Length: 81
Image (cartoon, rainbow, N blue to C red; front, side, top):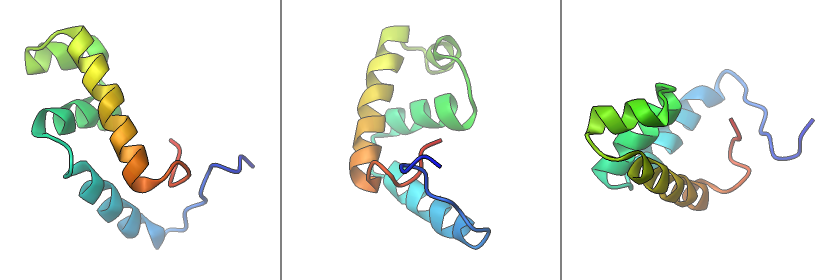
């Protein structure tokens, strides 16, 4: 098993959701929208850009910045999806 993966038990689910939502709440609103649309809703970069009326490059740049901040807050081995 990959050392960076954390095995989740069913009772860990609530704790995981709370930690993720708290970390997500630290991001600016547009970054929150980008992360949720890209990774929770699994939308393409182009779809997110269209939904938020911003350029594809802005989606890519802000997504990368937001994920870096989330990894810093949660730790690299928190959960890798």
